[in-house]
Length: 270
Image 1 (cartoon, rainbow, N blue to C red):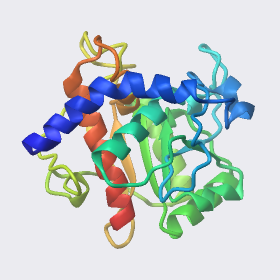
Image 2 (image 1 turned 180 degrees about the horizontal axis):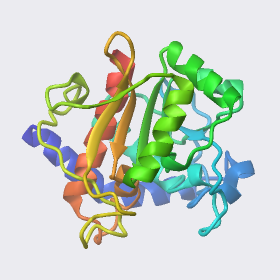
Image 3 (image 1 turned 90 degrees about the horizontal axis):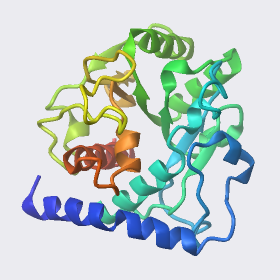
């Protein structure tokens, strides 16, 4: 990463908290009020929430047998929507992508799925796909869609995630991404990467729910293009969400933002 890029990332982290608070202060309600009870950290919308832009950060609303258990929210809504909006701030500041200031929630059971080619999903090790959900996602990928998955841990959750993948694309295999792969070099050269932990474990052993080894993996299509980018035994969404507090180390937040920016640009150019 160049010195100029490094300075940009540090400046971004310094202004994130102020930017989000100012944006929320101009808001007058919430775009996704019908989903507010399912989201961990809902916020009011800024005044430009309905601006037409070239890109929107879209979060996948899937179903899970663990919805509303324990912490009282849906699995898809973890870190939403502060995490999403802080990443959007990063994308707008660190690239030339004209990104909408608020996220798009895309329900897996609707045709909206085909209108938003870049999707992000968390806690995906607990998703529960019907045959219809799988069919829709298969068509989403057939039409060129890209999915980034994050914040799932341990072998049980991996097996559950891959069971869903096989329901969508029978026979699909996950591969380990290599440092030379294009997805790590679209904007930032990410030759060296390390685990991005959640806030709850960042100052300990950084192991969450028994997920010991971090992996940068992917599902590829027949041409070798990444269609599912997998952050396993990591929590980039937490890094985005808590980049504005002193307790979360800057080095993890900076890497999380750079990875996210690369994944967006890769999906838009490959």
